[in-house]
Amino acid sequence: MKSISLYVDKDTYLTRMHPFTKLCYILTAIAASLIAGKLWAFAIFIGISLVMLISGKIMKKVFPLIAFSFTILITIFLIHGLFNHENANLMFQLGPLKFYQEGMMYALRISCNILNMLLAFAVFVLTTKPTELVENLEQVGFSPKLGYVISSVFQIIPQMSGTMNIIMDAQRSRGLETEGNLITRAKSFLPLISPVVMSSLINTRERAIALEIRGFESGRKKTYLREGKMKTSDRVLCLVLAVLTAGAIVVRIML
Image (cartoon, rainbow, N blue to C red; front, side, top):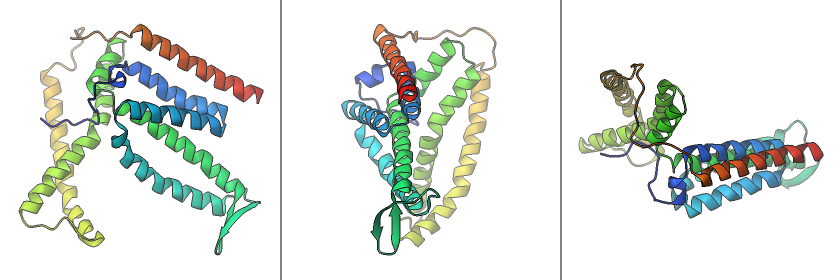
C-alpha cells in the first residue's frame, strides 16, 4: 500500500530521534530567532536546519518547497523594496524601479523568518511518523481526538495528491489531454475538483466508521506496542535548545 504521509524512512539519527525533541527544535528555531531579532540568529538556525536535512539524506525532498518559496520571497522583496512606508534611502535602481534600503532590509528579515520556519518544519515532518507522534502525545496524556487531528493534518496533502494522480491516470486512459500549455493544464484541472472532493468526503465517512468500530470513543485506557520514552540524548538536546532560547532572551535584553 502506498504511504499517505510525508515521512521519508532513511534510517538516520533524525528518524530515530524522539518526536518531542524535534518539536522542541522547531519551537527553538522559530522563537529564539524572533526573540533575538538579528539576521545572524536566523542565519544560524537556517544553517543548522540545512545541515540536519543534508546529513539526514532528505535534502532532495526539500528542494521543491524551497523553489516554491522563492517565488513568494521575490514578491516580498519587490513589494517592500518599492513600496514600504519607511523607504527613504535609495539602494539601487533598475530602470524606472527604485529599491530602497529600508524596504529591502525589512523584506530580508521576513524572508529569513519564512525560510527558517520552512526548513525547521521540514526537518520534523520528513523524519517523523505521524502514528509515532500521535502515540507519544497520547501516552503523555493528550486527548486521542487531538492526536487524530494532528495525524489527519500530516496525511491530508499526500492523500489528496495521491487521489489526484489516480484520477489523472484514469482521465489519460480515456483520452483526456492533461499535459501541454497552461490553458490545456487548466482545462484538465477543472474536471479533477469534483472527484477529488467527493473522494475526500467518502474517505472521511469511511474513517469515521473505522474509528467507531475500533472503539475510538471508548474511555478505557489504551495499551501501546512501544513505550515512547525519551532517551538521555533527547533530554540533553532539549536542555541545550532551552539554553539557546534563554540565550536569545539575554541577547534581546542586552543589545
